[in-house]
Length: 291
Image 1 (tube, rainbow, N blue to C red):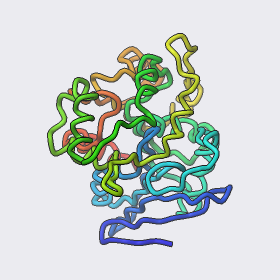
Image 2 (spheres, rainbow, N blue to C red):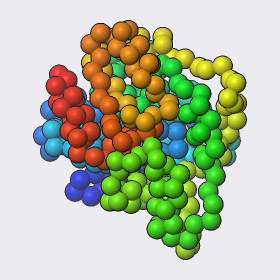
Image 3 (cartoon, one colour):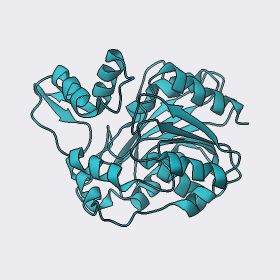
Image 4 (cartoon, rainbow, N blue to C red):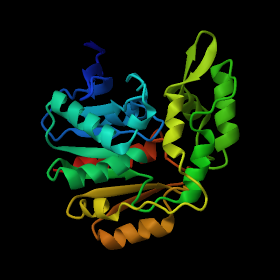
């Protein structure tokens, strides 16, 4: 089942357990280069990568942009415990198989970056290069605690203008460089208007994935997964105000991966929105250089 526009196609497949999954397929006119697979953050959707995927399609690269189960246009799972990394990884592999992609450049925001590192370790040869957007092998607990406060929670909102106001109120200090136009676009990527109300674009039960998060928790690390990228081109993007990827972790990543390229997005926190021209251009240059 699919519906298409001149720029992209919206496609649906069945997950290994039968749940319906959605992904966007940006088809390049002259598709002669490795495709790009874009993986969103925890409560984010495929729409976050639309601007980047269009840019990369102009470079001759097909773009696959996934909605995890419970997000975007993918079906919600009746069992919230399936919103975990292992189940999502199986879903990602199912989408790639359906799309005929055996090797690609991966762009992962936050949770998507964790998936990228895990896939590089689990499936050698699948990941040809990686862009890690505001995520690293060490995840700051304070940032997770902050995220826990808002995932799955939404006060009554009657309009998109209300939603924009809420986002600017709660995140404006960390995203001081975001323009009014970018705030509006980001709000449209985050919320939907339904029956005269503003609703989330994801299953609120996703909040349970953060049940164990607490200020005194032992941090989970992903250094072995990161090491799977050691011989591959990697661009690490960090929001200058991020509370998930610290500057110290970024430095440690560069020591572990001497070829690591870095990009710091000023005036943005976790995670950079991938809407501003300098960041889009930096990622496009990195991807363009990947053979």
